Amino acid sequence: MSDMEIIFLGTSSGTPTKKRNVSSIVIRRKSELLLFDVGEGTQRQMIISGIGLRKNVRIFISHMHGDHSSGLPSLLQSYSLLGREELLDVYGPKGIIEFALTNMRLLCFEPTYSLRIHVIKEGPILETSEYVIKALAVSHFIETYAFCLEEKQRPGKFNPQKARELGIPIRLWKKLQLGEKVIVNGREIDPSLVVSPPRRGRKVVISSDTKPLEKMIEFARNADVLIHDSTYSEVHSDKAIRNYHSTAKAAAMIAKKANVRLLVLTHFSARYENVDSLIAEAKSIFPNVIAAEDFLKIEVPYPE
Image 1 (spheres, rainbow, N blue to C red):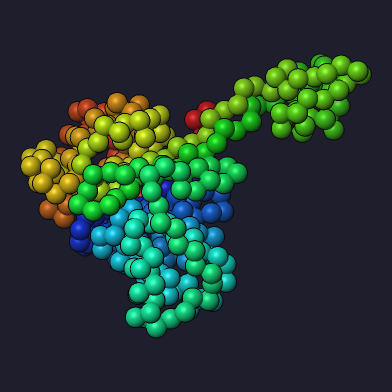
Image 2: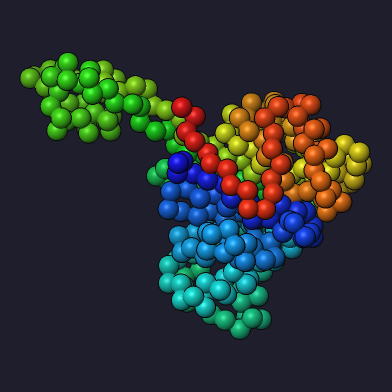
């Protein structure tokens, strides 16, 4: 089983339907939960999905439209009701601080935990020892961002047989795996003799609400998974343009140009009870396409 999994908690646009809640996507990476957008009812979706209201979580809000952000105040309150003590980081566009603090005041609760709110701009917004999250300003009615989670390079594969042939004691193997040179019988051993070149990590891109953008192609370049706004079919392309959204076909064109491995369509207009036509339109351009649905889980394995 992969240690990275994408879980869709809401896949409708604007308003919920009987089968789809409004926008929210989780990336579960090792023991950490990265929550992208918190539409109304997201915390219930978290419970139904089996995720639960985990403590090791970071929250990212793409823009301040209600179907992407209105579930945040109730989630923050629930964490307090559950006695959370751990620091909580929330990342979002201009207005996110006022939105959170005003709702906390009106709902009459003080968090039991430290709440750190970050106002984001285009570029890197979070870096850990293992990955970077970047934001890309996209084209919507208001300030809106796409997100890219990109893991840093992993060490190459260690060749124990070669190490034995070179007479390297086992106690020195770890140093070589970490890229350090070692001395064996007066001879300097370079890690490249027993370790393959570094391997790339995984990359997941979430577009949020946007018209098709050329700069999304480079942002999503070689992504393992591209999750893209596909609110409309080509039949309603005029509405897509007018409402600052994308069609499934437009999303597929970006996926093809960006050379992604998998395209996931989401944020469907409530007019489409069945999205087979949107999948067909996308597949006419890019073959490896699926449509998201609430509670769909996708494992993201390493590229090799």
